[in-house]
Length: 435
Image (cartoon, rainbow, N blue to C red; front, side):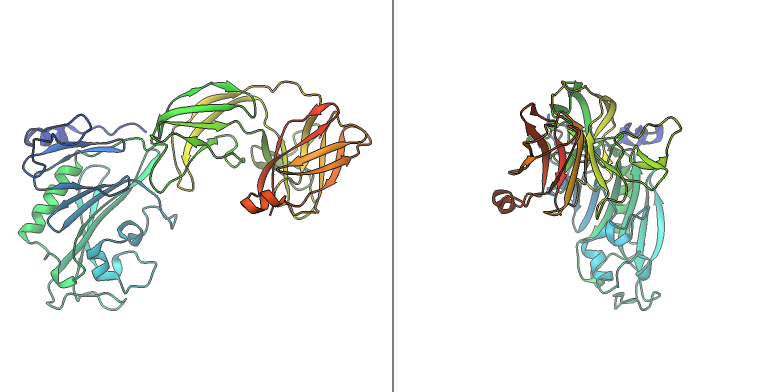
């Protein structure tokens, strides 16, 4: 995500602010008062000039939380929508704000904010427009709580937008759960708060929420350990993971993330999850597509073999793009190149295993490959194993999925790697999971 560039207009406004005192860590200089002069707040997620009278509060997460008297201004640089609706619903953005709760706590969900409000907009810059919400008895029903005085009172402002690799939200609220204590529309105090918010938000610079600086090594075979360096790999309330752009749904082992969030070690996946397709189609790039004219069916995931249609194949060597993603949020870093190197040759090799997901103990599992012995093949899945499996052609074996071992069951583990061992040696591994 490229940093936002302030317009000349914004630069001129910033130039009129009082001198800024900056400590090395981005906080105001310890000998300067946060409430008596402007200063630049700067952390790994954003930077913004803070005006006199406003103080930064510890939010406990990635948000910038500002307080002036009873007024609360929050900037959340990593915001995700539970509703998956562009712009989000108002209650998602403003959830937990006292003045919003004061007016809307009895409104049925989902709510959009309009149930209890009139609104206007304050344009901050090209990307930020604050929606200001006011309530009075002109709105009826819906469970809204109105001021007894009949006056039109403000109860919140918000903005939700998209910026590069992340959505963001901005909320302005009042710290009171009594609707009669909320600021009156057009009051001098409220107008000053709006002016402050606009002036500060004009200087807002959102940074890439997650960023990769380098990767080492840049090439490695399946099963090898690789370290990604960057920043913000540890963010409160989010779990970071490595994703292959070409195979975003493939199974990955949980990464080991440094405490300071600047590095992450992951294992190159030994296998890919593939699916069976209807007749005349094969899976390419996680989609079922018509079989190409020159395609040779060697190890395609076969259709109609039971209650699950997932197969496992070795991770193909090649050039890929990987990124660090905040799980289930849609937030990710820009992708960087990575090469999966060819693995060393093995005397025993698995080319296809099915099924490999949502398997129950006793289900029939088939393995295609090479180097299987006529007898005494052993399949190991986690701490469990199936021994003395025969192979008539040295290329196929069939076995019944073993029950989870007592140790794995006690630990609650249901996802493993499966491999084969015989007199020739040990095979490559394929991800395998139980219901």
